[in-house]
Length: 181
Length: 285
Image (cartoon, rainbow over all chains, first blue to last red):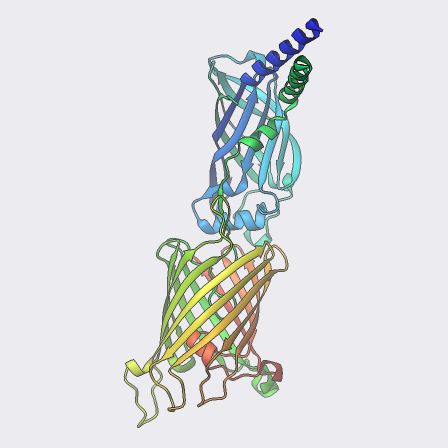
């Protein structure tokens, strides 16, 4: 019984230390950019939630669509109401694994992250690259990648076909700090 | 006994900590945000009357509106298309909450100006609030020359309207609005005409697809002009949205687009066929 008891104490401590190895941000930045000869559309979200589990190299990101800020208020309304349908699909999420996470150091290196990106209720597996570095208190990740609107069933009406690019550049800057529960 | 409880607690705690999904943690950590309900109505008008929609800060909108004659005038008048009341208007967002507009209608050569202020917003999440309230005030000036012997002074040509717009987006496809309205005219045509008329407006928007909605509007008057046989204004409209435009196609029993006129001076009987086809075309800059 005593051995069993000691075992569970160990298990508890192990999972507790695991939990200590999580890094979280609530103020992550994700922006996107659509470039066409007619107009460029840009929006930025500074309230992105992101978490990295340093013991497993797993990470997850949650993005509230209504927190994307546009220069033109009308664009923002159209984005939420007509394109990503924020009332129906309030969040975009990403869940994936940082490949070779053990290679992370205090100086910047590029790591690949493979996982599932869900936008507008549609999920697609993607692999992206991020410049990362880690200290005892901080995991920093920055980078950019492209997504196709058609992969996420976001339709562009023909009248604005020339104003919105099918390929959207997404940039991110995530500054995770030690997560204390 | 104590030990068993402790063990059970430790097992559960370990399991809970190790199996907790990362996305679930984010869910727990997500701050409760305040969400202002947007797009209750797409246009600044439900059909003829104003909606709680304001122009955003520094946004300029140019609106061209037409109301044709009555469709029951028949083929000779091409179902009313031979006559038209045209209104040109500019609307500008002085701030996100205050919109000013000026317009000119060909009917009675009327100039009008208005201010609309968004007092309370419908919100969900933190600080939630169930409906939105806007205040509206307008002045209209009739500039058409009166027949000899009936000349008016400028003051006698003026009309004032005050409205409280109370709207609620019930869900993403249904919005409703109730609009208590006060209309004052400086000059009454005959003594029996009231200078002050109170009315209550009802409006709704039903979304048919992502970019198309069906709107309806009705104004119940509590006093009526005696010099003309007035009816309550009834109107239906279809909003079609495409990029920076909102196009509204309208069927109503009134030919005018200024509050004081369509609320208190409507004479058409909608169900008798006195229906005016019309449209509002707006372009935002």
